[in-house]
Image (tube, rainbow, N blue to C red; front, top):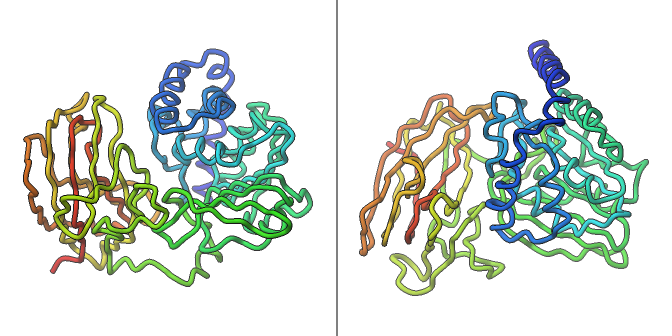
Length: 404
């Protein structure tokens, strides 16, 4: 704990020295505008109030200085204490779904960065944000004050208990994942209000929009996602817990699409993908990626528990075929399967790839590889797709199991 407090104090000192300069002459403005255009507008967010808010809030100040060069990429970034700052698209998407209004009082349950609260505060009347990790909550509170976001009220504690003294709320936005909707948040939502929350098992989550009408909740399932869980007791009380000794791929056959939105359930952050019902290698469906803009994202992700102290390797199998593939703007932008590894603190500890696939392969090609797992790994995220390349990539029949 002493080291954690030192880290936060040092971060606060660096921040206090540089923040005024960063705001008066923001060298990141161009990156922020490009981020909004490439990663938010291009993915379907249209509310100009939301877009203006994301163009305004200096996201680079909400990440550690060592990650500032990645602040405007569309990815979650580690902020310490097993927590992450949400990707910009997810922040914008959740904000738009809530349909925020200038007179709204909003409750935001955060994991520590304060970024979601800062964005929505540009649109609504008041924001009450609860950060779940004490050192991160203090840091976020100090930053929000220095940025003069005077309509944001901060608290550190169990976000799933809500903020009873300030209730009821017009809108509630939850940026960490419970197994079910906490009852206090339901009780504190105003009649006619809206809540967006990621619900599900540890690595199988879906955004749910809840609308309270005449005291009852009307629930709509939205897109798959992956959020870190609430720390402590709520995570311990999960009925379904991941088993890092038995990693597996969910919906590997790409057959399940319960809400019929054309996207495979169980896979999140899908970009430029669609399910196709004719010509599958296995079953009735396969997934197709198509991209004609070099450097644009076209991939999907899925997380899993993977304990490297118990699993020394994993066997990965799937089928692919390609057409008109061209590398993107760098050697990293090539079609491939990548397994990213994370330790117990959710810090990246390396990755291993299958691919790239740059030559045309018009027939289905089977891939089978045994991939070594780092001993310190406790989680993994699969990334598969064009990854910035152009052309067409078809995929089917994913399987993953512990190696022998």
